[in-house]
Length: 166
Image (cartoon, rainbow, N blue to C red; front, side, top):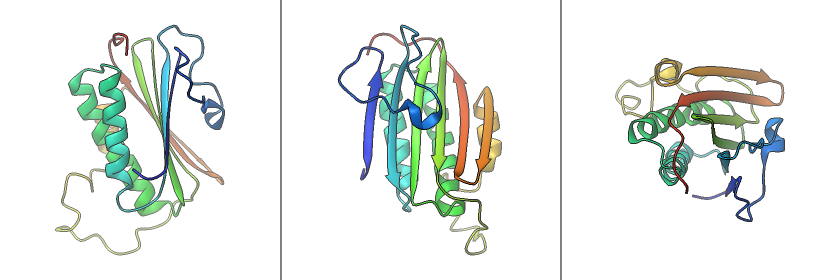
């Protein structure tokens, strides 16, 4: 992965807390609260790189495998939308876990734009394309999209049992 990845946790393992970029600290005092953030340039590989980041983080936090699988699908879809539709130079993924909830935030600095070329069913038929926000709705317990002149932020939540110590 090119770019920056930081892991922040309530245990204070020396990493910088980046919660201010999202309007609040990821570690809000919950004893099991933890957070990880990764920002990358928007490239065709960004969805795969962010999926890897999310999967590694969730496994380290002992998130159940079925939730990790759903998380990876949602990350792929949301970051893929940034790559295709935002015009943003960068994409940021923030993962937080506390009180039985895994929260994913995907943020870009762009504005919605139409697909640069018509969809080609054979080229877009892979697992990383074409599932739209339907997949996000099916895999998550709560969704929110915030569209602003400074970019888009999508929040998705997954219900999970609290993981053990990392």
